[in-house]
Length: 409
Image 1 (cartoon, rainbow, N blue to C red):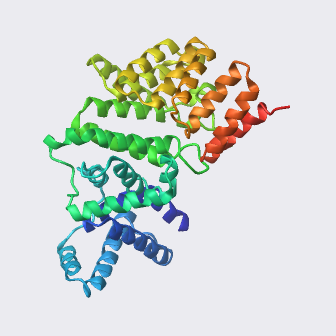
Image 2: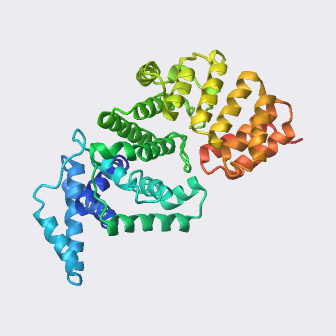
Image 3: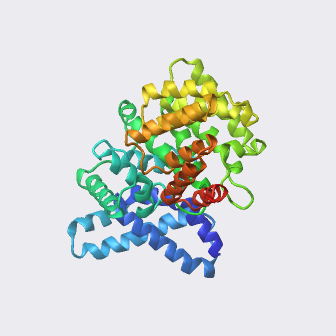
C-alpha cells in the first residue's frame, strides 16, 4: 500500500495540487490541503483499501480538510468564513482532469506566467507548483541563494492573491501575448526532466512527460508555430531518454549512445512535425532547435551526423536568440565540424566575455576540447571545475570518471 501511495504522489500530486489551487484559489491553502490529503490516505488506505479513483479521493479529501482549516480560521476572520461558505456551495468539485479541457495544470501555468509577475518569479513559481521542485533545487538551477528564491515565490503568491489574478486560461485574443512566457516555462519543465539540476538520476521521466503533455495541449489550444516547434524539440530529445543512462544508471553522452534504443515513435512524430514546420517557411527559436535535434535524429551513427548543417542552424539561431548558452552550443558544433581547436577558441571567447562562469556545461565542454587538442593537464583542471559546479549526482560521477582518465601523473 505504501508503494502504491508513493506512486500516486510521484505521478499525480502536481495534478491534484493544480485542481486544489483552482478550487481553493489560494496556493498556500492548497499545498496544506494536499499534504493533509496524503496524510489521511496513509492512515486510511492500509485499513480500508485504496479507492477506485485515488486522484478524485485525494482531491475531495484535500478540499474538505481545507474547508475544516478555513472554518477554524473563520472564527477569527469573517472573510475566510465567506470563502468557506463558497466552498460548501460547490456541489461537485472533483473531476479527473485527464481528457477534460481546459486542463487544471495549464490554467495553473497561465496563472503563474501572468504578466503582472516578474519573469524570474513566474519561472520559480511554476517550477515549485507545477513541477514540485523544492526551493533548494530551484535555487541551485538558477544559481541564486535559497532565501532569495523563497522570497520570490512568496511575493509571487501574494501578488496573485492581492491582485485577484484569475485562475484561468486567457481568452483567445490574449493568449498569443502570453504564449512566449508559457512556452519558456514548459521548456524549463522539460529541461528539468531531461537533465535534472540535482538528485541521483540522469533524467526525470515524469517531468519530461508532463512537459510534453502540456506542449500538446498548447498546440491544440493555439496551433502556434512556435508551440509546434517546442513540441517537436521535446519529442526528439525525449526519444533519447532510454539511451542516456547505462544499466548501472551512469550518464551516457550523445556520441556514445546506442541509437537503436532511441524511441522510434517519438522520433517519427518529432521528425514529421519538423518537416511540416520547415515547409511553412520561417521558424522561430524552438523550431530551429527542433531542426537541430532532427539532424541528430536522422544520423544512425554519430559519424553520420551532418555537423556543417548543425553549425548553420546554430548560426541562424544566434541571430534570433543570441544567448551565451546558444553560443556555447554553436562552439561545440563548430568543434565537431571543423576541429576542436576552432571550437575551443570560441569557448575561450565566451569565458573572456565573463559569461557562463558558473555554468557546469561550459567547463565540461572546454575540458573535452582541451583534451582533444592534447592539453590534458588543462583539461583535468577544467573537469575539476565542472565537477565542483555539478549538482546532479550522475553528472558528478561522469565528470569524476573523466578526471580519473586524465589524472595528472
